[in-house]
Length: 267
Image (tube, rainbow, N blue to C red; front, side, top):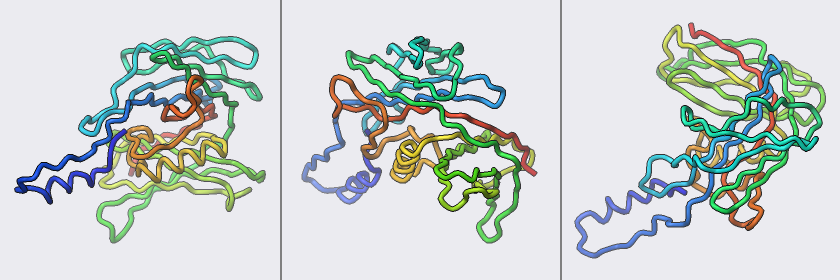
């Protein structure tokens, strides 16, 4: 688990001092980091992936991939789907699992003698229906990209949004407390966006527990400009439980989401 970068200031302040100062850089044992998602796509196909890494030390740039775990998902009918590691992209995948409504999906991961489990059901969402682009005056070269969706009248909907282009990756969240039954916007602010840049925007349905988890994680990591599991500067407990030791929980989350995407070419 990485430490705050402000620790480096100590080295600057102590430059030239003769006394040796020991700084604790957090040598806690690495933990499993899990980004597991079953996604129901617009064409009714499923994209099912699990990314496993291990939390790294203070001076390490990236979390190392975990390539030798046992990963499977069992549905509510008792059918088990093994996930196979693909070295081409560092993901565990299963292309046969087809996601259905009102059915439990239980993820099981066995790694280094520990068993991790979580159970979720599909959370549906609504499609993105339009995109608008405008330049923001007075803030340099900043472009606002806004996607719109029709929020249902029923309360309790939660959304995870992803913006991606060749140079940017951003994540944001929205709940429907003030948008029930309305056409709603979701904006991303991109610096130095060149014309004719291919952009992908996604909307995923998540439940209230997932919303709280990702909200806390984004606040603590400022991960709007990167993947939400890129770093773990603080302890954020997800929905995956270590069956041998609940306190030695992994980082990350397992979600089952309907996902819509829309493609756009910047003007």
